[in-house]
Image 1 (spheres, rainbow, N blue to C red):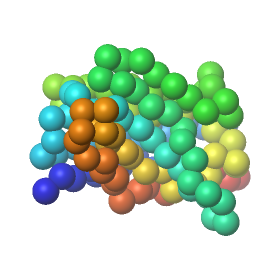
Image 2: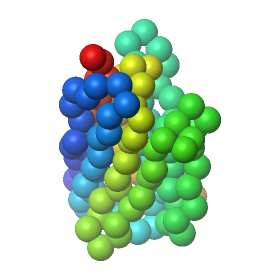
Image 3: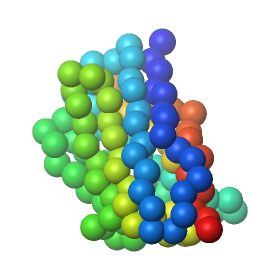
Length: 118
């Protein structure tokens, strides 16, 4: 069955950096739009960034210029480089694989906690 496994979360001080990874298995990774979402306590899940199969990227305004999404199709992995982290970036970050444009499924990882605190 399809698996998305995130890693790289943790505790970081404000202004610091983290790199999240999401390794996919049992899907044709290269055709999926990959995304990172986050959910903070008491808040709705929000889209952070997406990257299409062609490499086009999209970001929520609050992370523009600080976060970078990338993908390595040879490794079936999508990354989220997070710089200049702020306490309001604290959330559970989840990886998403969206194949609806090709009548394929939508899949989610289990999430990884990112905490930004001094």
